[in-house]
Image (cartoon, each protein chain N blue to C red):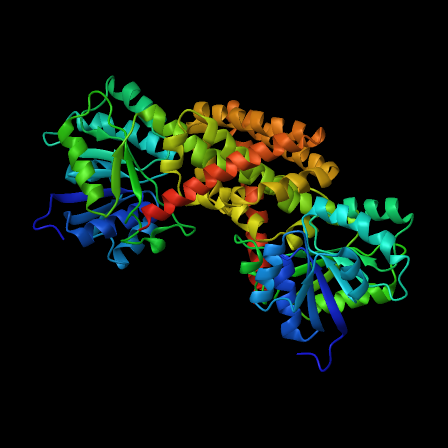
Length: 300
Length: 300
C-alpha cells in the first residue's frame, strides 16, 4: 500500500479481464484514488460498478479523456488502434494531458498508428504489454493478483517523455509485476515466436483434426500431451484474429522459421534418418528443460 | 482385489515406468502371484527388486519366456520389435506357450514384425497400448495407479486366439484401466494425429526458437501458453525417434494434413483475410472446447 496515491483518476477503456484486474490491483496498492470505466458495452461497466472495480463510468470519450490522469486502453489490439485515433487528437487541446498507455499484445501497429495520427510519437503515450492472462475472460474474472510476479514489457520510443514512462512503470510495479523495457520490434518478434505462433499452430492442428474423418476417435483417445498442447486453441478467436493481422510481419517470419524446421523433420522421418531425428529432439529437450528451470527460478 | 490370481507368473521385459507400474498395479489387484523382471540393464532390475516391484529377475531370455504365463514387452517400440524377433521362434518349442503382449505406441510395425518372423499372426501375441505416461521415467517412478481411468487400446488381429485377447483384457481391467479395441491402422492414425504429430511440432518449435538469435529473450519472456504448448518437447528423444520411424506412414500423413492447414492460415495472415482467420480459429475453439468437455466427463 502506497503512503499516498500517485495519481487521482485512472480511466480504464475496455473493462475486461485485463482492465478490470488492473483497476483492482491499483485500488489494492493505493496507486490511484478513483477508477473510471469507459466502453461501448454498458453491461460490463455496470457490472464493474456492482463489483466495486470502478467507482463510476462514462460512455463519453471526451469526459473519459478530460478526467483522466492515466488513461489505460485495455482493449484488443485493433480496437486499441481505433481508440488511439480518436484519443490523440483530443490531447492537443488539453492543458493537463493524461498519460496514455495500453496493454495490447502487438506494439508496432500501435506505434505506427500514433505516428500516423500525431505526426510524431506523443510524449505521453507509453506502449505497454502485461504478459498475463487467464482461461477466463470478462470483468467478472478480474483478479487483483493477476499481474503479481508476471512480466510487463514497456517499449518506450523516441519522443516519449521520461516522466510519462516512469509513471506507467510505477503503476505496473505497484501491481506486483516485474517491469522490463524492450525495443518495439524486438517485443513483436519475441511475442510472435513465444505466443502468436504457438496459438496459430494450436488452432491449425485442432481445426485440421476436427475436419478429418476420424475426428471423433481422435478426440476420444487424445491424452494429456494433446490436452496441454492444444489448450490455447480455446482462446478468443477475435483477439487472435486481430493479433495475427496486427503482427503480420513478425508472425509470417516465425511461421516460415517453424515451417522450415518442420520440413527438415518431415524429410528425416521420410528417409528414416534416426540420427537427424535424435539430434533435433535432443537439442529441443535440452532447450525446453532449460526453459523449465527458468520458470522454476522465476516462481521462487 | 481378485479372489484368486488369474495367472501365476507375469514376466516384464524392460522394467521402466510402464513395466514397473503394471507390475505394481497387478500385484495390488492380485491378478498374478509372481512378478519376474527381464532386461539388459541389471541396475533397473536390482532396483525393481529393492522396491518390491518384482520378486526376482533373470538376464536369460529363455528362462524369461519359459517361466512366463504372461510376457509383457514393456520396452520402446524398436526394442520391442527386436525382442519379438527373438521371442516368437522360442514359443514354437514350448508346451505351454505364454500369452505375449506389449505396450508400444505403434502397433503396425510390431504386427508386421510378427507376420514376418512367424509367417502368420501368433495366436498368443496380443498387441496393446496403454495411453498413460508421466513426465518422470524409470522404475523409480513406477506407480500402481498409473493406469486408473486411463485408456488401454487393444488391436486384436486375425489369427489371435480369443482366449489370449481376453486374458490381456482382464489383466488391464484389473489395473483400473478402460480397455477398448481398435483396428491396428486406425490406432496408428489416431495416435499419429493426437500424440506423435504434436510431439514433432513441439520439438520443431522449441528447436527452431532455440537456434534463433533472440533465443535468450524468447525463453525469458515466454508465458504459460508456451509452457503448456512445449511441455512435450521435454520427452525422451530416443523413444520419440523410434516412434517417428515406426509410425512413419501415418505420421507423414498427419504432418502433411497439418502443413496444408498451416499454409492456409499463413496465406490468410499474409492477405490479412480476417474472415478466414476468424472462421478457422472459431471452428478450432469449438472443437477444443468439446474436447475439454469430453475430458471433464471422463475424469468424473
